Length: 114
Length: 113
Image (cartoon, rainbow over all chains, first blue to last red; front, side, top):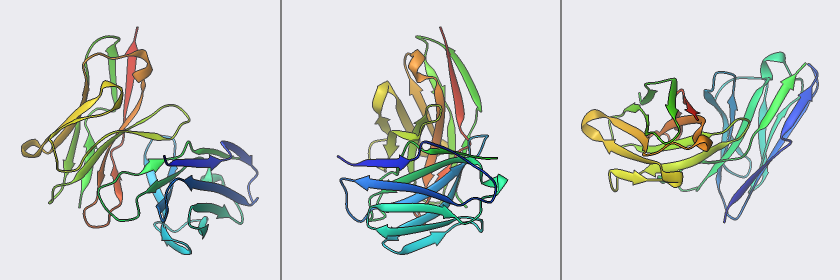
């Protein structure tokens, strides 16, 4: 069966520091991968998605970037964090055929910027 | 543009009573629809999905949802609430154009003993 892992679960970082959040998927090949941010108030905002190695689409201009160095690895990064980057970050995967298959989410990373 | 509207931001029920969480969608095409549940500080877990097969969809943990095209609704129900059902619930549509997910704003379900 397929599983998705995110780490760390929680992170406290000072303003201006770098960021690296990692997400890996097991049990499937060539998945579509996604990064979302969920701010207080519940709504999910799609940040990035990837349909293959090295292929990244950005949904909103921001202080973050994403990379996909391997088929089942998706990394969210920042060179200098802002206070506004605080939030709950969720990684997700779906079958890479744009079918009706749902997205499956990791347990998320709670990021607090001080 | 496609959109998803969850009609209640907060629903409170007593344990053992039925649950109804309402969702309406707008779409020019037959959509793919999903319900997800999110417990505090956790990711979203898929409860059920509708993909143009049977209109009554059964999911995990006793939940089900009925797709009603005439009403553009996809309400989530459960005959008897359990304390462990207390969580945030999201109705989600998959865009037929882009394949991306369109989220409702969520409904907080409170279950009272």
